[in-house]
Image (cartoon, rainbow, N blue to C red; front, side, top):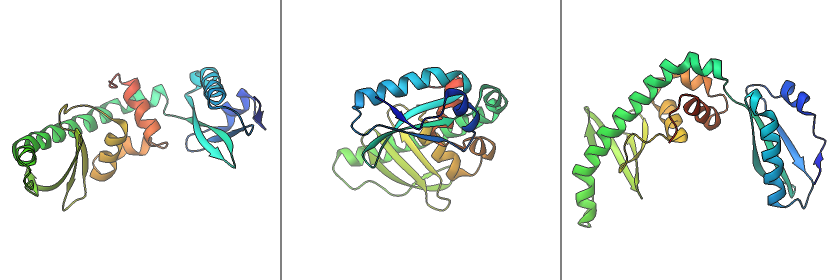
Length: 196
C-alpha cells in the first residue's frame, strides 16, 4: 500500500494547524484493513504533536485519511474551569429534564398513550422526542438542545455536549476552542479525565 503525494511527518506537523487539516489519499483498491493500519501507524507517529488521524472515507474510490490538530494540553488546562462550568450546566439540566421525563412521559408512553407536551422545567417549555434510551429535549422559545441519556443522566457524549454549547450560547469560551468540533470536545473531555 502506498500513500499518494503524502508529505513527511515533519511537513505534516508544520502544515496542519488549528482549523487547517490535511487529507491524504491512499492507492485505489487499498483494503480497509490496510487503511486502518495506515491510520494507526500515522496516528502513533504524530500523537505527541496533538495531531489525530482517522479514516475519512472514499474520494473517487480512493480511501482517505484526515489529519487534524486538536486542542493542546496547555489550552485544555486553561479552559478547564470553563469546561467544568459547561459540564455542570449540561448535567444539571439533563438531570432535571430526565426526571420530568420519568414522571410525565415514560408512564404515558408505557400505557400507549400520547405523552404530554411540552414539559416545563425551570419555567421553560421543552419539546421532548424520545428515541431508545435517549430523549432530545429542545426548548420551544430558545432552541436550546439537550440530548439526554434518560437512564443514565450525567453521561457525557462529546457531540451532545458540543450541541448544547452551540445552542445554549452560554459557553462561548469552550465553543470557540472547538475549532475541530467534535474532535476538540472529545479531546477536552479526555484531557480532563471526563470520558466514560
